[in-house]
Amino acid sequence: MYPVLFSVGRFQIYSWGLMVAVALLFGILWVGKTAQKRKVATFDQIIDLALYVIIGGFIFAKLVHVFYEFETYRHDLLAIFSGFSGSFFGAVIGGLLLGVYYTKRAKIDTWRLADIVALYVPLGHILGRIGCLLGGCCYGVVSARPWALPCAASDHLLRHPTQIYEMIGNLLLFAVLLLISRRQEKREAGYFPGFIFWLYVGFYCLLRIVVEAFRESQIFAFGWLRTTQVWSLLIAVVVFVYIGFRMKKRAGKEQHASSKVYR
Image (cartoon, rainbow, N blue to C red):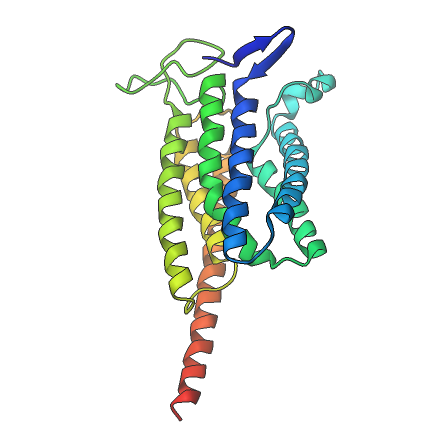
């Protein structure tokens, strides 16, 4: 494990923090370039949006993490302000709330931009999980599998490398979203603004359900199900029902419009 990559005097460079910074930098470049190409927003607007998303993401990531790990912080409240640990779901919620606020304020098409952002989130998440692997957090349960690794900062036991599982899952998710996004650009029919975004949310929730089954966690909700799995399942069901409803509604409108043309 390399939680601290290197030090400059008393200043330490943490692997997780560095990888998150790299992910944000590349995210701004990827989203900014694509948004300009599709004439959704200017590059300067994407930079401003990133500031709002970063602030909201860090605040809510910490809040949700403290909520889940309240017993850990209950006896040492000052520990809340130490370290960089946080909840990914919290970061998404906070970033989404302030991001939407900015798009409304800047009069940007929120859902068209959300589709672009969602396309590159899996790549940023891969970089973040590299930081987790180097830092020894978000590790799996003890395992005797041939691919098990000593991936926890707290011990040297062989465990499921859930950080790598999630990297592979996010890479596949990016490939699927990229294919659908390119198809969407060529053929608007059947899709709706925000389709890629909601598809990402649904697929990522399914990915987390699988990964959490191998992840070290003491937060159980119902029997063997972890709290994160329950929330992911509920969100996935709602999202896919919503996608089905929107696509059916759009298909009905397109069919109605085509029938008028041929009358």
